[in-house]
Image (cartoon, rainbow, N blue to C red; front, side):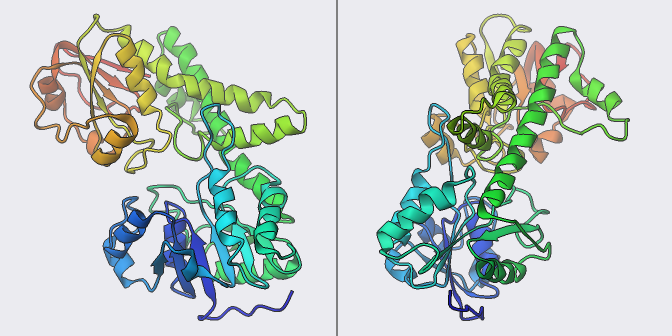
Length: 429
């Protein structure tokens, strides 16, 4: 490999401008000549107008950035480094769907140059980068992987909506086909993060490290969700139990909930798939997934058991997490469907979600304002996502919205300190 010296003129391309790619591209553009590429012309057009629908980068930062934007592969030829940040979802059978990664390789193969480095940040199971991506790039480029061009892997650690652990502050794990590639990636990522870098011993180790980060969280939440189910049947609030248990110095502070999103609710299936490929039964991983996937229906059953048949329920929150517009793989939809199949009409409000996306993805018409909802019209108000604005709801607002004898169902313990209005019932997990 010829020696690549990084300068402010080094051409870097970030492929995929979603929650991961856009913040990375903006950060890199402070140090290098960066082009952000996305196949969505609408996405590129919006970003050029200063609008980021993910709300990760505000208008001023977009307008001040030197980042170039393009949806044409003609504009990203022969870059020194390509960083692929496309999503890696699962299909309807929870099997890894590598279509976006494969599509990226098909686009990049014909345009990468001699000595280009292609770095993957997308979450995959160990082996995808060198077993799938490398051969595809070699076939499309007509070059030899590891001689004419090189692979790297640096797992993304973006937490949507998190304004603290941003890409310029976190530790970046890096790996590459050769020590020289790792040296270059260390220089590249060190230029944009104060959190430093960690040199993984191989690409597969870096891939494995990423996929277990979220699998570990999924299993821990699965345990808490299972004890929640047990304690509900015993008439005990799990939040009261966790508060008591949390006084021990080494108790892990996980809480129950609906585990959705693009990472925790998806990544364990990638690890499980790889385990099956090598004839290992991933029992703990899939057990945690099964519990978490069933949590929404369990909550729906517990809520409906406390209500008379029929009526209307107001659900507060549709996104997969608080203070974030991300609707990918949200389990709030499963809860809503669980309420509907048990005979209830459901109205939905979300303080962060895009109403157009809610309609497009789930055929849900979000209520535009809580203030405009009719008085005393709901059998229950269900707190599903702990957006900051929901935490501030006062007792008088519940009294206005609910029928006499109505139910405040607090899944996230948002309203533990809200005094229960007279003639209103209150329940939490």
